[in-house]
Length: 404
Image (cartoon, rainbow, N blue to C red; front, side):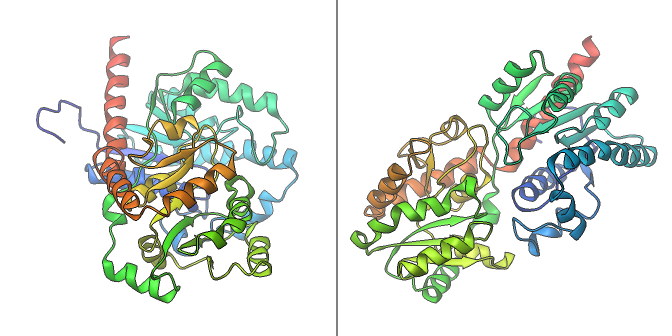
């Protein structure tokens, strides 16, 4: 805590979530929790039963369920799936009340918002415990699984967003969308995602080993790391760049991950004899990821939600890897053109391809922008910065509550 900081000491926080705690969800949960603990705060986590965000990343694919029963639940028809989500309020309520009986001195509850979840807000209000919601999802956004009980989801969400103590949104456009849909909501702040520099610092030996092993030496490497799913569009990007690779023999793509679109993409790469320039690693052990990131010279994010703050954007930047990303408003909030990365018009993958090909010819420019990106994350967008904002927000909410 900096000198002169008069923020009241927060000692105990409960982090509650209903996610599987894997992939990006797990990164965010661990980032917030570790940063709170670094401030000397005791943090307990109540997870979906069987979903430990600290154990799953070493064993889990981004698209594979933590427990077999989770896979069975996600395969339910949408109406039944949403009934299960509603019913989970009974489980969450029982577990929260049990925890609070054992830990009466909690300073506040921090919850990752989930659709149809309301019992935590009800319990916190009844007991006079501040509860801050981190809003990453909403009934107002386009979903992979369209909502069946849309009106009910909107009604519950409106009540939750009005009755929480405070709200944390990952982008300004997301906050504005929630306000437009629900009218008055609880006090809110905007904190984009983050990445810790110390977890994305690599040695020349790591870079050299991976580049030699994968045949990347002497090439400019454009990387991708994440889930191979339709909404990330990495398969569509490869389809678009395929015909341009012959004119850019110095360029190689290093694509790390797996998912629903991976098998078809691998088949496309093999059928078009692209394997010499398109390296598909598939799912890799967690401890191999640092070396793979170290091998990249630039990164591509073909698509993202128009309201989301992609964690991978910050992780690439923390590595000193300049990103090429769609110009959605949340990305424009953190990326400065030709200083910390480059943007293309969202949805225009031909423009994304052009950006990658053009900048792959400027090695000095890649190094310059990559260094700027890393410096920006170090100074502004590490998880500790998010926690400083969160604790200041908690202090402001507490002061407002005392004054009312």
